[in-house]
Length: 359
Image (tube, rainbow, N blue to C red; front, top):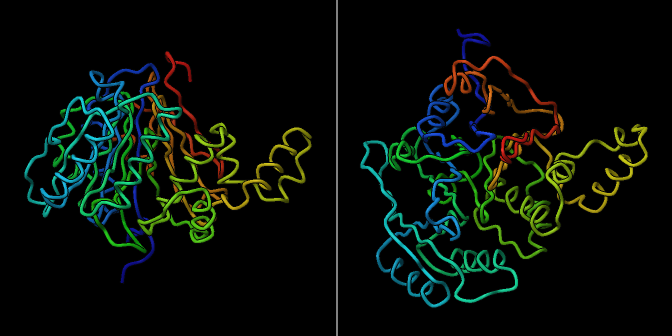
């Protein structure tokens, strides 16, 4: 008989991130190292990475990464894109045959921009992505930001990284995810990170308020077709930050809001009123249940636990670099010289911005 401590219960999924505060380039092999000691947190049904700063020659264009199930779907999608967007370059995303990645779809990328000036370029690009993902068969845009890209698939994270040859990329910010799906099947589009424009989410946990959150966000035009709570978290963050103009700290106070009893006991009147306002106006965006997320964007990331800290997350610091992972061992795998570690409190956002080294 084995006792507690002799059997590993990983609480499902693994997340990790590394960023250079001054914008130094980091090879993709670094973030892959973080996933190796967390291998048992995944079950081979999903792995993925987001990389920022990887397309400097096309930094002013939106990079569409698209899965196609067949050549006919690719042709139909390309015909549509050429009619509404300027495509300055398109090519297959380089991949490598591996023993562990089977039945991969066609993976292609396009660097695009609108044909003419539009009032809201980001909203226009996002509408194009949504139309293709909701109306076109056998194709799926899984990445659509500028100077960044998502690389994901069905497999363990290390195998997905080998498939995409991530050691050939360099970026100033990387995030990673190893998936252990509990309520949805593993498929290429359902792997993490989830993406809206340049923003990405990797998520460990389970949002028990999924159905209420889904109904709320769909009132604002979002369509939740992937049947996963992580997709809903991505859309909520997009709505709060891009559409409502909330800061990262304010968004954190919405999705991981303090309890009403905590708010009532806050002595600072301004802070108490702010929290009361956010909890009241955006009450349907509150996420309940255990979670830890890394929300990344062009220029930085925010790491956040649920308000009760029911999922593990550790932050490490060394010189110019900040690391986040589900386990301390993952940080040490990326950088054995890290000595400073911090375990964020429940609902406490850890925000890193790449602004000439300012943190």
